[in-house]
Length: 145
Picture 1: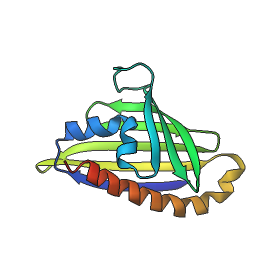
Picture 2: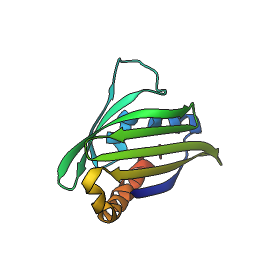
Picture 3: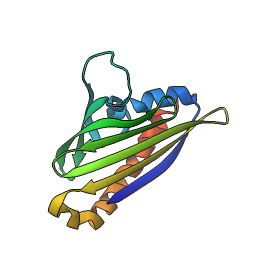
Picture 4: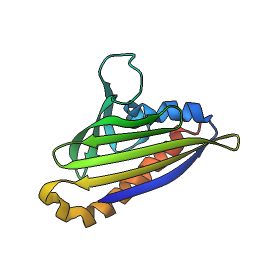
């Protein structure tokens, strides 16, 4: 399993930061590794437990599509999303809290390879660390204004 975590401070109010990141269709706007992201389901549906998103990432020179679903949701504060495809499971936890004049976002992600690919977990950790650093840098820019 590969793990990444980071903290992003934003001048934006916690409610705004949470609104922007709990809708995972926005990942294309802040994660440079994501090439497509959209919401599955009906337009206008609330972001809540059960909401689903399709995220296509460039990963090791291939495209990898994951379907994410919100599995835990505390409005304005915490969201947990589980993404999966044939080869990997990703669990992303995002918490947001007021901090100073703005807010602080904590991001934690676990990526687990499935089946025989699990033997490559040590290599995945190294690759995932670089991907996560770029995503956190993008998130910092996205939440700066």
